[in-house]
Image 1: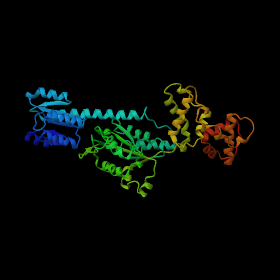
Image 2 (image 1 turned 180 degrees about the vertical axis):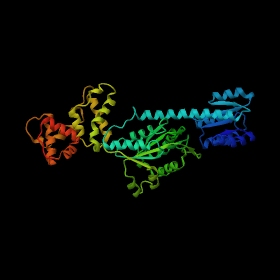
Image 3 (image 1 turned 90 degrees about the horizontal axis):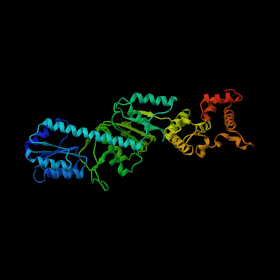
Image 4 (image 1 turned 180 degrees about the horizontal axis):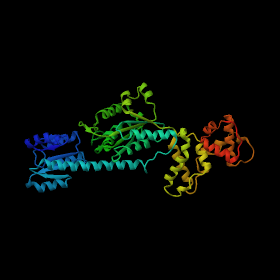
Length: 447
């Protein structure tokens, strides 16, 4: 915003500021400037110190009250230099003396833009630190995970909107972060938000921001996450939980690149790549009129489906060891996980997917802070009863190896000696099954 009572300067700024790449509101006096500040938020205001009705310092004071993040620049004559210094003490970013050249205004606005960009990167980094610890890594070498990596490599360098599908806990946010890290926006912010974790009354403010006083409880000006992610990537997790009213507003943002802060009339342009994720069936939601069909097609330019953990049981040992290193943070992390615990982990169906596995490993590290993790350190649902089946009825005490072989024999009998099917039921690889049979001299049956 530019405020000055000289008509010639007003006309000049109306022409030149847009030419320099800025959208400008030009005001003839201080009271008009304050009225504009009450309706919209600006990145920067340039105000003359001497104006009728309300001087520049008064405008700056009002600006800092309603929008502390807005930078203020004062225009002053040489005779008012002391007043300009007083304006700096009131929070002004800098001052220009009249007459000033356009090149000076351009250079000063460039500095304001650079400062805003640094603040934006800081907010994005702060947001990431609160959510994540350590660099993300997709663990697993099964064909399903190799396909996921291939799709990431293909779509990451593009600007396409991506929809990530998969059950809760499969690692959809890791895929989104990997897309960002392999994109041309990797040096810019990555911002994630769970659409299902916010009250419907707050999600618009969280995404698009609000101005002070826009609603009850809006005590300060707030920058929305779309602005925080400007230049980078925003990840909208569980987009299927987005209320219908917000779906329409998100569609408008995706189509126009404009957001509108709550309580403001002036739109703000943002440049973000949008990555979405959901565990829900969007076509079924569209049929039930719970999700907009046009939004579904808009976000589903490219689709990546993550397999459930039970569909890639062979990745469980590697995942478990990776999680153990992360939880122990270098403290005896090399001790690893014992074979009895690996067998128990690979025998589980994992309804909570990788998130459940992470919780199980954390539980185990609490009980076992050094040395290898054993079955006894796992939650009670991983006790030996999962493997013994009919062996429960047999008298006497059995060793762990005997219990394991009993489970293998039972599985082979149920599948008439078909080893691939038996291995699949046991949740182990065919190679592991052969190794166990060979090391124990178990009787062979036709596969």
